[in-house]
Figure (tube, rainbow, N blue to C red):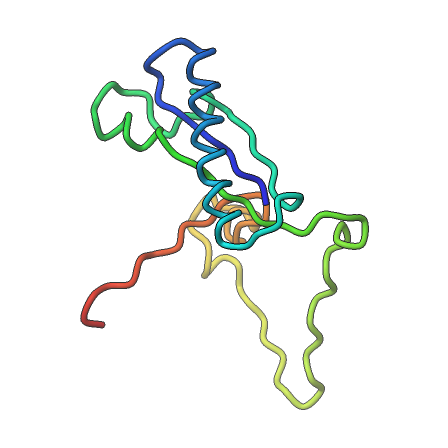
Length: 129
């Protein structure tokens, strides 16, 4: 598990690197308390690098003060992409017309789901549904 600590753009770069690490270490402590083995966790600070927004509003600063958690398997045996599932012989084959599923000017790469290295946003459940 990789834990990345970030800050807003207030303060010096060196202070923000320390603060980002403090955020990452705090998240690590919570994961250790939950039973994750320490050797499975790596923490890094990116400080004020890779901000989500650059204006000076409170909303923007709050968005930049964050921790990202990335979970992935590490090792040579996990470096190979899994093979695509095969279609059973009795099911009809389906073809997709890329012009009908992608907007004008889109590429096939843009229409694919994010890879493991790209964070994906997961919608929060709505109450009452």
